[in-house]
Length: 226
Length: 226
DNA sequence: CACACATTTCATTTCAGAATGAAGTATGTG
DNA sequence: CACATACTTCATTCTGAAATGAAATGTGTG
Image (cartoon, rainbow over all chains, first blue to last red; front, side):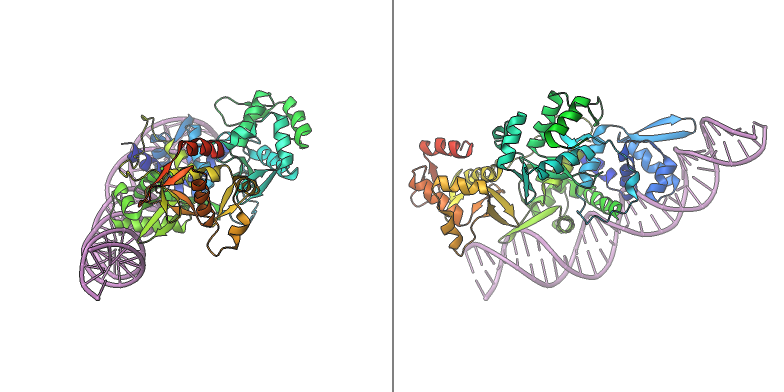
C-alpha cells in the first residue's frame, strides 16, 4: 500500500543520525561512510548500517572507488525533501555561527519552480528595495510601481491572481538563511528569464546558469550584479 | 544548534502513525483526533499524544469547536514537506485522496447570519486568494485591495469596525472542515447578497438558494462558479 | 442533572531498532 | 606477503518512545 511506503520513507529520514548525514550531502558532494559517521556522531558500523538502509530505499547511491565508497543522493527529489524539511525548522535569530560557511552550494539554483541560492536572495532583496513588492504578514503585495514594472517585463499579473497558490511570498533559503521569492510570481519570473535566455537550466540538476546576456539584463532591470 | 532542530522535526514526521495523519490532512481539511486515530490505525490516546507533539512543534494547529478539536496544518510549509516526502515514494499509480462525499448537507446555507456550506468556503477561499483579506492570528484583516473591493461592492467597512463583534474571522465549517467567513463583514456580505437578490433565504430553513443572477454576479465578482 | 461522547493525562508495559564489540571482506602499500 | 585501512556483517545488548488501560476533564444533550 502507498501509505505504508510513505511511512517507511519518512521513518528512514526521521532518524537523527540519518538526517544529519543527508543534510551534510546537501552540497551535492559525495562522502565516505567514515566521514558521514563523524558528521552524525556515530560509530562507523552504525553509519554503515544507516547508509545501507538508505541505499536500499533508493535514497542514496554509492560509487565504489578502490577501497573507498562514496555516498550521494540517488535522485534529485531527495534534496527537495531535505530542503522542504529544513524549512520547517523554527526560524531563529541569526546566530550566524561561522561553522557552516564551508557549504558552497550552487550560487543560483531552483527551489521547486523558482530561483533560489544567493542569486535568488539578491533578486528578492532588490524587488523589495525598489519597492515593487512590500511584505505584509508573510505575503508580498505588489505596489503600484511594481505593477508597472512587471507589466513592462512582460508578466501578466492579473492572470496570477486567479490562481489558487499564493501570488508572492518569501521562502527562506536554506543556504543563505535569508528569503528568496516564491509563489506564482516567482514561477513566471523564472519562466520569463529562461524564455529570454537570461538563465538556463542545467540538465538533471537544480543548478541554473546565468548567461552573460542575463547578467547585463538583470543589472539593467534591477541594478544588481549577479 | 540548527542541526538538532532539523533532526527533531524530521523525527517527528518520520513516525508511521504521525505521517499517516499528516497525509490525511493533505486535502487541506481539518480532522478530529478520533478520525485521525482511525486513519493511523492507533488508539485515540496514542493519536492525542502524537497530535499534541505536532502542535507543540508548530506543525499543526488546533481549533476548538465545542467538544470537538479540529487539527490542521499550522503552516503551508508542512504541506510542502509532506508533498516532497511523498515524491520519494517508489513509483506508484495515482492515489485518490478519500473525500468526505458522505456528508450531503445544503451546498449553501447560513451559519448564524453568514454564508456557510461549500459556497461559503469557496467565497472565503477567493477573498483570501485575491488578497482582499489576510489572516493574522485567527482574525482576518482587510488589505488595501480589499478596502477598494468592499467599497465598490457597497459595503461601508468603517461602520463595521465600530461594532463590538470581530470584523472578520475564519469559522471552521462543520460539513466542509474548512473555514468560511464569519464576523460582521460576513453578516453584511450576506445581507447585501440578499438585498441584490443574488441569494434567497428559504423559509423556516437555514438553506440559501442562489439565483442565476447571483451565480453570474458572484463569478464576475470573485471569479468562482457557485 | 445525569449521561454520553470527545479528548487528554498518567502510570506502566512493551518492543523495534539503534548502538556496540568482535570478526570478516576487500583493497591498497611497503 | 604482511600489514594497514576502509568498510561491512553478525550477534547481542540496551533504550527511547510508542502503545495501552484506567481515570480525569470538558462539553454538549435529553
